Length: 248
Image (cartoon, rainbow, N blue to C red; front, side):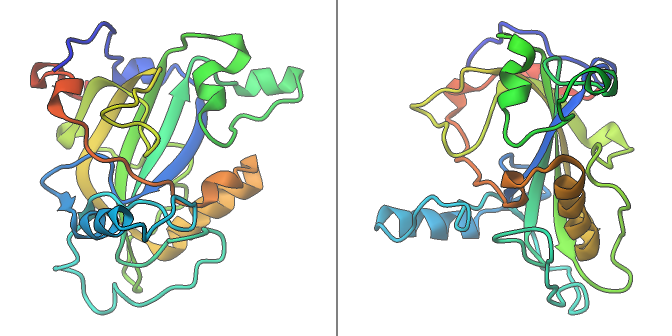
């Protein structure tokens, strides 16, 4: 375990930071009792070990999935996504990251300069406006896409996570994620994580609208594809359990 050398930012402190990027991962990069199905991950890793997979946006590494056991045939009805790209499928789970950073731009900033509120990737969040050590909070929410007339619709899944009950959410100090970082390649950035541990069903049309808004409002073309999900790090590289606190 690593003893953190950074403060964990709270919910109210996160709200003071501009939203600088939204992207999503195939499966969850975290693991909870609600999302813990690693069958897809194991199959991918076994194929990759034999040279059967390339790390492309069209073929990302899957993370943990919510169980499909309780889904109805209606909820599993196929849906044709018009705006989300790559491996976006009814029944699968996706971890959406809402990246807030002191290096991001506010609406007031954009009025005075030709800049966008959000950009693809983490470049703006990590070192935007010349900041070398910005404060960054990432909200992580896992959605399971379902599709029937009673599927839970979300009008705007872009401008912040939809969690309202924070009793099942935690905060802790960590770093950036994704398959480019591992037990041997460390991330250079310090991040506060706010992670919801529940599986949240979302209507396929609502998730597709998330992608539409990403493209139409902020030109997040590169983030319309799901990113790959990392392997869980060895415990020796993560903070101790005493630093994983209820979100406050």
